[in-house]
Length: 508
Image (cartoon, rainbow, N blue to C red; front, side, top):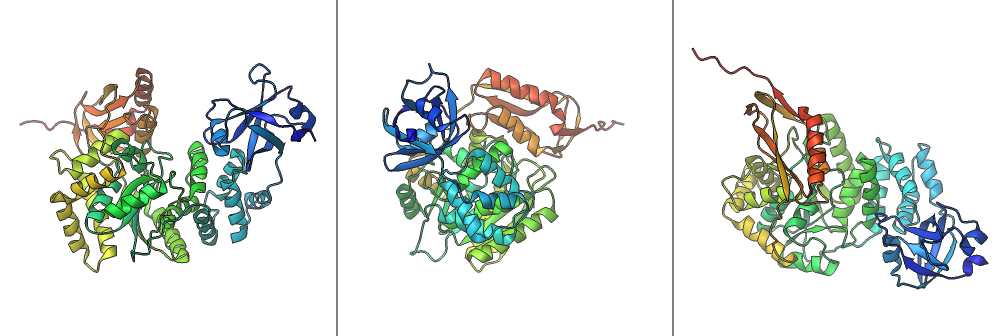
């Protein structure tokens, strides 16, 4: 058959953001003989490697005759070299798609069906549209506790796992998110591991925020650690602060996150499965979940938080791990910085006990660290908080943080943005609130987290009196264009800083 005619691999140099795409000339003999058209799903074979990819057709002058072009992700997945002979066929039927359709129509899936979907997504058998269909069908509370347990288990089983037989308990901490500047994790990990807890912290990069823990830590040290290197860091220091993608812990979750980011979607069942799959794959047995609650945070009210906490507890019991959920104040941004570099500045100022360190970030990190210590030891909350405070104040946490960074490749200098501007108030009054979602979006349109230097440095806190023309924040960007774009967004959304007009007291 015509599909057995080999084509020569050609790298197109096109970044399709991990979606496998191939390119064939419209006049290609294989294309014509097999009836391939744009958007056809094809099975590509190169040696012993196989990949399912989406076809794009191109004009004749773009590709050499007898060649097949590859996107960057497809090229790297197949480990191709220029001119490698490649065979092309129609993609085989993906049987788990029938389970996907079943879920789209509102039916529950069993463990085997969910396992099949996750297995096939991990093998790159699903297109981005099909992954989006799965995520959408599971959103809005349409994943039961049993389905979430099955999803979590399938995601763990489709990747690497760390085992720590020499330790009885392994700790971890995760924040639900939605609160700009809430970069407590590096501080908590430093305090907890300085106290002797084993805490192999791996984090995803930002999904819908201007910075995740991995983005902020990448400003300070190397976070893309191969599995053996990560294990060595934990053996040497008792902890790590790494990105999860490089070590292959729940790698299918990274494929899902890529589509979730495009959809700006973060459903409860998927969230629980994402968090717990990475923690369990890292070998964690005791997990602390921070749930900030606020009108513009990811978790809007206590009712939603309690429902999410109950789902975490249910899934954790089903998987044999211990979870403690704590509900915290999510009414305003934490610290002064928003964006990778600016949040890194706050982290270092807290660890160094700097005079200008943000007190809200310090106290929040101490509280969360004390919750981990309380899980680890039979001590009161007061004793746990006192121990955490002593570890930070004595410099032991800073010493431990530097030790972790050195083991991961060294502590780096924080970069500085090339362009900035002050965002000023147009009125006098008291700052009543901040809109967390629009603050985060402002930092994102300035370039964060793609540009680590981009973001915001807040100059005020809720409850403070504001004077006309007083700086509310400093906006940072890498390029003048991004700065101008972000500034325009602020001008159209000035009410993200809600300044309530108050008359100055009249002197008698």
